[in-house]
Length: 517
Image (cartoon, rainbow, N blue to C red; front, side, top):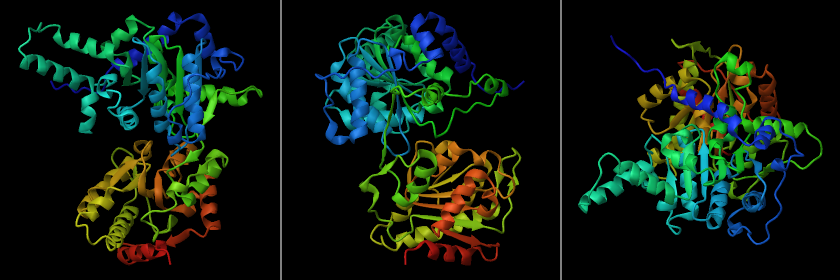
């Protein structure tokens, strides 16, 4: 009999434990989280701390400095505090978190630690990279910053900060020096010493309940500050997991206008287990009176060209975002930054897993992308590897795995193996110089009309973004109607009637359309 492991029960067990642990919290904190009020000191801004000012302000904009200073003030405050940082796309959430860590490190006493969590391993690794960029080895970061997890990083440089690799390295040195070892306990002993010495511990929310971090649980005064990144993408139960360490100061960082937690259970949704703690608090605060709200919004976006940012800023952020001057000049100035191709002669189908795909749209994208790479290569004849280099700066986003699989097959057949092709969910937190969007659907719309999903999809590009799909059909639905009408007003659309016989010719015409005259 063959047995196949489908999933692990450990995450579910940790979720249940996190809920049960609420009864062990201080009564005031439990009541405050479950029934929040802006009148509660827990959600009020801390008193300014005049003797601990942000030391790296020249690297940050005004709102980022404000967020960092609030974190420093929270640390010094006698009250328990919780604060929200709203970070729209490209506003430097990770950079701000790194700035917070850099400014809190000198304030920690011998036993105090910062626990830094995120829903996914990728998010944790990105945070680790950003923190290392700021503090580097000047603060002996290899000992002070530790990444705890069960999945090794793809980036070899990060291995020096992974607990498992650090334990192996220490063990190897002991073997080389022929030290006496107790085989049954040596690994745990080394691990315990490393964690005791660490000042910043980075873990996924789920893994923060691992028995490897028992040291933090045994002495709940150790975790002085909890920071949760991508807090809007984590379910409320997940965010409660690290609360087991008695964290008195909590910072939730996220964007309620991007992807929500992925919860498939209908019963879980009925009990509102598909919402994040950040979003629940944010909704309550937004509906409350004129009392000051514990929310700091980062408002300068550094990612998108102004033309790309225009619609998302208006539709999702009420024009509160300011464009940085840094993304106004770039190597793609010969291309229009934004364009919509309204593909008419196409039909979508479903694969064996009932995921939508659109073969004609795939062919159009593959041919267009090939022509685009050839065009850009004309201006870099000195670099023989430029084709690979430019492919690595292109991303393709589509809402369906069926389309993702077909795109990967077709692009590999055309030797475009280095282009990052993924679903909207895979692209949260990512960015590329050039983004091509494949809309797929030609009948009805499914979940593709979800406002948060559209926001993520439309805010990944830095310099160039082209949308391919049956936009005439999609424009029948609310948000797509706004997108399409905006494109028409700005003269950024072209109808395409491609067939298999005309795709090559049409792809050349499409490229000519987006080349600046």
